[in-house]
Image (cartoon, rainbow, N blue to C red; front, side, top):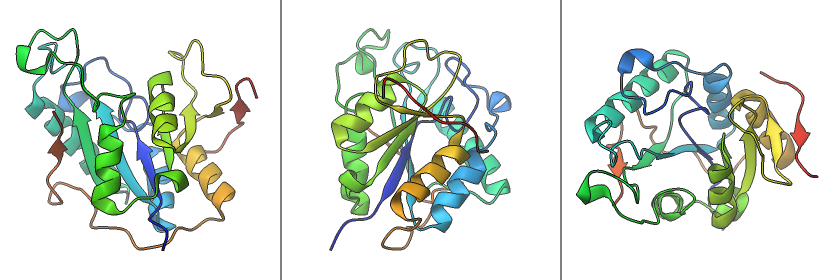
Length: 215
């Protein structure tokens, strides 16, 4: 029996507005289409899981508790619009970090795939039938290394998009594209969603025109 389908999601610039080294809960703002996209995917039976690099922890610019607080606020805002995530992982490491405990080369930092594979094992996810959606070349490479299909959110920071990747304007457009390409549904029911009262977050050592870059 095939495993479950999942859309792995980046956080900053994909679900919430991009703020460098986001640490203040007051600065957390959902991007247009984010809640609608997640809501649409989960209604169709897809899992939605967060995979995020938070190298600011290693650099000493924010703490692990700051990351968790931001994630909790994000979940609160999503919940207010009827959207939930099934699970979340973040990597606090960076090879050039100022905090010795986190100054390491690791496979959990994207484009490494350790967090994706950890989630796949935890939720019986078939990576070959799943997607990775993010806003950077690192997200594209992570998804491709893991064997997922990839979609990339167009943004002003994306100066040189990877070749052959489809660009979409927002997460709702990504959800529509995924469902249209896969027949709309997915096998299996959703797990209990992550939220303020949901599963403990784990820490590891709109529609619009679409474009295919170079394709």
